[in-house]
Length: 205
Image 1 (spheres, rainbow, N blue to C red):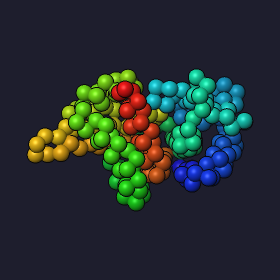
Image 2: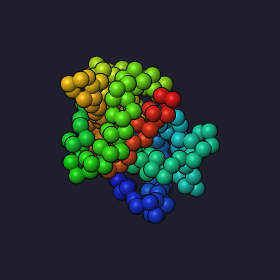
Image 3: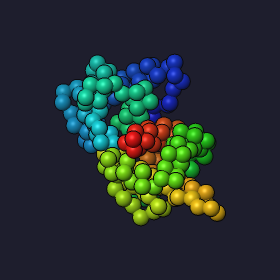
Image 4: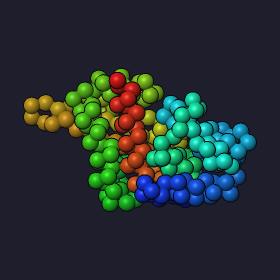
């Protein structure tokens, strides 16, 4: 794994520039093949949760296919995936705590991913179902509403909520395909979870 450490806000540009430099030294055909992306000269096109990110490795420009700019967080997430993926899906679901350094960053994961998921959909499984279907989620047999998402071509995430009642509070969980343990750092996955939940909240509106 060739990780891009999640930078402080004031050093995002340096971190992205360093990652692009490393990416530019690789065979872009190999990068595209492993990532499940397509290559057009120095440009890579990558599916990201139903959208397409376009990155020009030579110029460093990163945007969505509609011309809008990727957020700083999403740039770091995309670059981590491109640098780290081996093109394989693990086939087993693991919890965030099972990811290397997951326990260390669990509070970040909880605050950025789980807490917003629970707040938005803990008592509204049908709302999660509507949002998930709009983002291409595949229904899974867990909880009151559970969906598998292909965040990147070879990075799968599951989101599940259990509706509470008078005795048991609502709960939620986010699982990852086991391949992430070798392709992306725990801290970056916390931000990825945040992006997924934010997309679900937006899709539910």
